[in-house]
Figure 1 (spheres, each protein chain N blue to C red):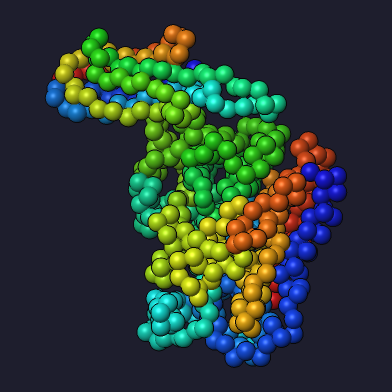
Figure 2 (figure 1 turned 180 degrees about the horizontal axis):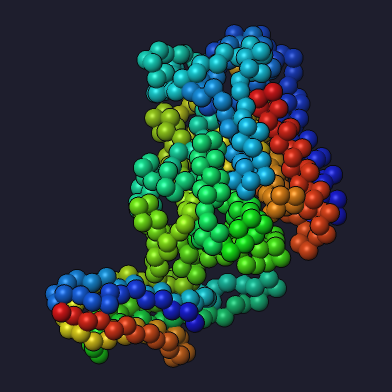
Length: 105
Length: 425
C-alpha cells in the first residue's frame, strides 16, 4: 500500500501547519458488478487518524462514497517537537501507518 | 475492432461526410441572400465558411480571423519531435477568398445576439442572419498555480501551434544530454485527448535517438487517457528508459509550477525540469464567453442536430469550444461538425426542418516518426443529442505487426492532406 505524507520538518511554536496524507486504496463500494455480472465485494478503509505525540488531532470516518486513493489535507497547530503518526484502518481491522518527525522551535 | 478497420473506417467517414449533404433538395440550396458570419478560421470555421458558400452561393459569407496564417495543431507534435518543419503546418485563406468568401482579418470583440451584430476590434460592426462561431480554446490562466501568460516562454504549452511549437522544439534541441523533460497533462476536457501522449512518444523518440541520457517524465492529472493501452504498449517496447508516465493515483497531478526555478509541484513532490511543457487547463475561446454561448463549465452547450447554441438562438458553435461529448475536441470533429452545421443552416434558411445525420471522428496518433495508432468513433444526433453508435468504430489492434503501425502512419499523412485541403484548399 503506497502512502504519501507531506508535513513540514520544522515549524515555529504556534504555527498553523498543513498536513497532507494520501493512501493508494481501491475504496471498492460493494455496489459494482464485474464483467460477468458478479458482485465485486466491498473493500474500504473506514477510519483515518492523525496523532501528534499520541494525541489525536484529526480523524475521519470513511464510507463507500469516498473515492479511490483517498487524499486528505488538514491543519494543526505546531506545539512541540515529536512525531506525527498517520494511520488508516480498513473494514476488516487491517491497518497501515506512516509517521513524520517534526522539530518545533 | 473489425478485421478490416481501414475499409470500414473510410466507409464510415465517407458516409458521415455526405450524409449531412445528401437529401438537400435544390430548393434548400436556395438563392438565399442571407448574411452569414463565421468567427474563427481554424478547422471548424474555415470548413463552415466554405460549405456555407458552396451550399448557398447567393449568401454573403464572411470569415473573421485575426491571423493571416493558421498553424494547424494536428501533426505539430511531429515538429516538436524534430521530424517535420513548422512551415508544413501553415495554411492561408486565399483558397476561401477565391470561393467568394470575404475574409476580415481582425479579432471579433463582441457579439450582440439581439441586434445580430458582431463588433470587430477596430470598432466596425457586421450584421448577420446566422452566426457560426468556432472560437477554439483559450487557457485558464492561473487555474494551475503559477502558470499565467508570463510563464509561457520558460514553460511553453505548445497547445496552440505556431511560435510556441518551435519554442518547445528549440528548448529540446538546446538541452544538454542528461536533462529531464517534464510534461504536465491536464484533466479532461481539453483539446485533442490523445495529444499529450502522442507528444510524449515523439519527445521520447527524440531523446532516445539524439540525447539518450535524457528522460521525459509525464505528470498527469488523470489516471486514464485516450488509447492508453496502445500508448503504453508502444512506450514499453520503444522507450522503456526514456519515458515515465505518472498518473494521478501515483501522485502525478501537478498543482503548481514556478517558471523561475523551473519546478513543477505535485501534492507531495517538487520536480526540477530542464525543459518543461505545461499543457494548462482550458476553456472555450474568449469570444464565446463574450457572446454568452459558454456556460459555467467554460464550454459551449449545443444542440447536436444543428450545433446551434442552447443558450443563444441564432448562434451556432463548432469544434473544440463545444460540449459535444462523446465527440472529442479534434480537427476531424470540428471539420465534420462544420459540414453538418452548414447543411442544417441551409435547411433552416429554406424553411425546412433540420435532419438527423451520422457523424464520426478518427484521431491518429504517432508513437514514433513512422508508426501511428488510431481511434474511431461514430455518432448520431437524433433529437439533438450526440450519442456513440455501439459497436461502430474502435481502436487499432494491440500487438500488431510493425507494418500495421506504418500503414496507419501513412493513412494519418493522407488524412492530414485531406482535412487541410477540405478546410483551406
